[in-house]
Amino acid sequence: MKLQYAIFKQLNEPKETQQAEGKTVEIHSMNNTRYLSRFAGKGQFAVWTSDSKSYKLLVEDGYYKVMKDLYSKRVNQVWIRFYEQADKVRFGLLYKMVFPMIALSMVLAVLFSTVEALSDYQNYALIGILAVVLITNMLQTSIMRKKVEGARSEAVKDIKHIVGEARFNELLEQQGKYYEDYFKFEEKVEPVEEVVEAQVEEKTETEDNKSK
Image (cartoon, rainbow, N blue to C red; front, side):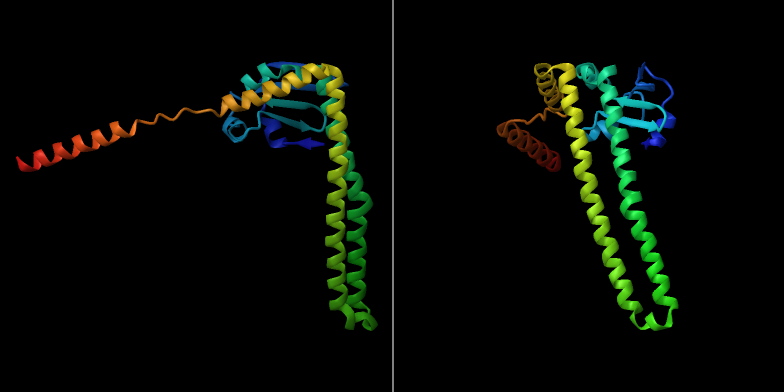
């Protein structure tokens, strides 16, 4: 399974390396890459990448320092299992639902276009085939979403067990605070009286210059 493969190929200077269930996990600083604004700027402080054999985790420095317990070797093993399980779900549905439906649709399309007795119904057949393909795709997407969310829920349960529920809840609070602090900005607002006074003084100076 490949994840963000284009990014994976560009990460060559890990600050930490782990071995998780026979997989190499490299942890890379997001701050030293051009992806900081792309991901952290949108609130995504950690990005998993993979070439299907090993994994590289791109993470914002401050976030990693605060949330390091969620990226330990044992926790990363859980995430690797989740991504691989999600990939199996996706390919399983493709082979069981999507590919057979596409093959059947192609066969029917050829039959209705080449068999003279069926040619009069070709347009109706094509509309029916298109409808079935769209419904199959929607059904496949819905099933995949449910199964992946189920796998994600199991992964979260495993992570809670590893770090402890109390520590997990504490990390969630720290995460929320980090988001808040990262995007916090102070806007300096001058008192209305000072703004008005400044505008009056500027106007007076302008009029004085004109009179001279």
